[in-house]
Image (cartoon, rainbow, N blue to C red):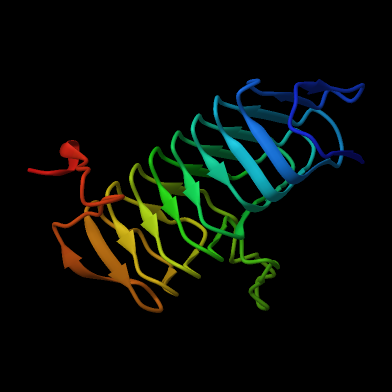
Length: 209
């Protein structure tokens, strides 16, 4: 295992590599390459702080420009986490992508504290009659300009449409449409035709009819 504590261009004898811009920075960062052929690509003016990133064989992390990432990312063998531009994480995001599955987060997303996003359930579950596994890992897709409130959990196989809001402590087990508010356990749509903004002075015009 190789452990890196500074965000900088890097390549080792196991073909693990980091490609980053000189304008990006980090603090309290640990990157752990468990095996070989893992890749990290970081865009410009991005900040990785209070973060631990663990990558298995052939794992891949891509983070766009002007983003702030804080939390723990566990990316298993041949899985990918792809994050767009202008992500803002408040604190302690946890992403787990395993079994070759992918997590995709679009541009201009806001993720509050203690949010969990994962492609699996944590342990395999089997039908005791057939012996067949019944909880395979699945991709997660989060669209552009999505706001996830504190302690939201986004579970395997879910997609969340652009402009939507998921309320605090909700558990997303099914797809969420664009421009809606979803809330509850499990999360259900409680309001249609709405979106959010970073402040009172901005408007994401593409989301308005």
